[in-house]
Image (cartoon, rainbow, N blue to C red):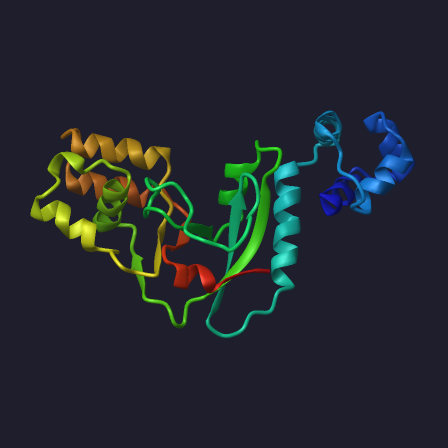
Amino acid sequence: MKELIKAIRSAANMNQEQFASALGTTPLSINRWENGKTLPNRMAQTQLYNVCLDNKISVYQTILDKIKTEAESINLEEGRVLLYHGSKSGIVGDIAPKSREMCDFGRGFYMGTDPGQPLTLICDFEKSKFYIVSIDVSALDSVEIQADLDWAMLVAFHSGRMEQIKGTAFYEKYSQLDAGKDLVIGSIANDRMFYVLDNFFTGGITDMALVNSLSALKLGKQYVATTAKACASVRVE
């Protein structure tokens, strides 16, 4: 937060006294925020946002720029992949596959290749935390699913949309596609994708139309650590 406040003040071309006046607070408060000694409360955060609006500063882009600058300074060992994770209340204890079960690839620890995706998921939560992480993939049993029909069906399986055909060969195929894997890599599903999926299962579109629709979604990629071994390979950078 302290670096974000500095970035906003710099973009607004204000010194601490001018910034304090614009926010209706004191230069001492600005100094304490920028030194990380205290955090602005919700009212002050709203004022910060209003200053950004008045000065045509994109808060989202400012945050992304800061994240990317931090990421570029990180040097990783061979075999490690740099990723991003968002938590609504912060990571407590060891990293573990703690997500809810009906996520894209089931219960796991989810990380994305694009910082914008986890950022938008947590931005409305007051105690949320954003992490730059890395994972050592060299010793993990991994499967990467391309954004095709198999990927869509695997997401459908994990989101409970195949329960009506449980016990069929089709169901069994996708129940086993990533079974026992330490790490699942694949595109991120979003609300539009689920709309397309539901239309497919109700007979509204064909499998070819489903594949064509998926190719137009331009979804980001995610890495999902589904076992304790994979989670132990994750490091907060």
